[in-house]
Length: 250
Image (cartoon, rainbow, N blue to C red; front, side, top):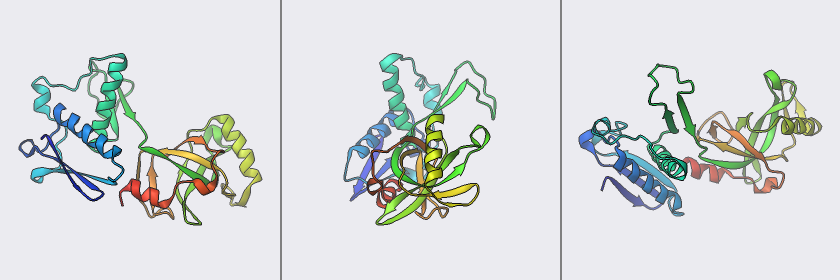
């Protein structure tokens, strides 16, 4: 087996078993990792996944010898076949702990610190949470005259605990409408920042949740962005601290 899986209660341990090459990943192992993590996502009893490298090394990255031997990760497909390949490669990248994919023009030279349009980063949110806005802030630049930065919270029983702040994702029209609403529903004005009545639910996408002392919840989102307004959802149905702990794996 290119990848071993061990289960103990809600914890799934995925083991890279190629110690002879410091657990470098070739195409076969990338496919195996993708299959394992798809199965993990589909298992309601599996809450935590741990990726482990056997033999004292975690993972040396891509298997360069396999690439040189004629097993490159070059995509020749198009249309639906290309989408299927990218889905598989994206799943394998996330399984390795990467944020996403780097799509590169094979004709482009390597220039340290510069990508431009020849190197494109492809990422996808891990998932979304429904949260409630607790504070807003005046924006910068072209948005300096509107309340465009939203601090938001999750539920913990009857308490609301802040978990992050986002300032992208809404249209200019939506931001203008919400600015008027928040001005009319301000609890306390501190100048640049104001607390507001916590009755506006939004859906926020993110790449990762990690422990943080910055927010009352004890967690912070990595790269949060507003997916949409949720006027259809009451505050009583927003996501909870328990859900956040499950996502964070602790």
